[in-house]
Length: 190
Ligand code: HEC
Ligand code: HEC
Ligand code: HEC
Ligand code: HEC
Image (cartoon, helix red, strand yellow):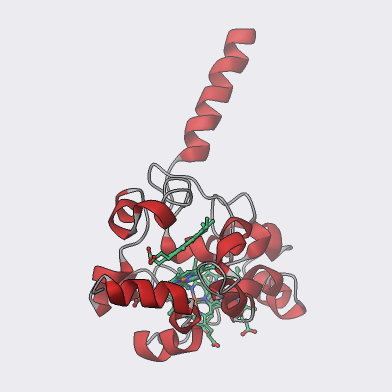
């Protein structure tokens, strides 16, 4: 009996970890881990504060609204905030904090590998440890990190045509980088 339970748990474990999008060898840590350094100019800058005010930070809360519940009903879903069919784009699947909505790691990649090293070891080391390589991507590749969610989908009743430039402008947080980091990059010729 115990061996059967053990086998069952092993199967559940493997199935549970099977990759959706973006999930590689790394795990999600949640946005609070980024907030420590990315909400003050004394450290990396105020990216967290910009994100907190844009729609991605509220993407999970959206699933609690009447508008979401009505849309979900048409798909035979009672509670969209518990349905994989909605959570798959309105949260970071695999995050310990799904209630944070579409948080940093949805775009920058699961951070267990790079969160502790990118400040000291630099950008290339971070990319090698799972950070999305935005600084070396062309526009098409950048857009592909968005269109895994911003796409037509039978469950996505609110789809609007996605244009990278137009959409990126609305969530641009590059101006939030601290003066100190900017000065350091300039000195290094980056
Ligand atoms: C211990 C402080 C610290 C933590 C925690 C931290 N960062 Fe950073 N991060 C920095 C600093 C400092 C920089 C600026 C590095 C530079 O360019 O000199 C940076 C830069 C970045 C960059 C730009 C690329 C680069 O290397 O310049 C991204 C993207 C990023 N961080 C994402 C994240 C995400 C996502 C999290 C949470 C999972 C996070 N960071 C947590 C300090 C931190
Ligand atoms: C994990 C899925 C996911 C990814 C990846 C993602 N988004 Fe989103 N995005 C959403 C969801 C869900 C919403 C709706 C949030 C809400 O209002 O509840 C949204 C909303 C937005 C909005 C607001 C649209 C409006 O009508 O005001 C913009 C702008 C946006 N995203 C830009 C981007 C860009 C640019 C990227 C890539 C760099 C990106 N998104 C990546 C899921 C995602
Ligand atoms: C394929 C990804 C995807 C799936 C699956 C998905 N959504 Fe969305 N949803 C989005 C994106 C992206 C937006 C923002 C669209 C835009 O403005 O361009 C959005 C917007 C919304 C909005 C509008 C927010 C507002 O008021 O502006 C609601 C409500 C919503 N979704 C509910 C749901 C529900 C309920 C489900 C499950 C039945 C669901 N979504 C499944 C990607 C998705
Ligand atoms: C919807 C996707 C998305 C989300 C969510 C997101 N980012 Fe970004 N981030 C981007 C993109 C795209 C860029 C720009 C890359 C480029 O073109 O240079 C960027 C750039 C950055 C940079 C570099 C800024 C610079 O100096 O140029 C940092 C640092 C960063 N993000 C941190 C964060 C943190 C921290 C969070 C969460 C609080 C976060 N991001 C949430 C997509 C996202």
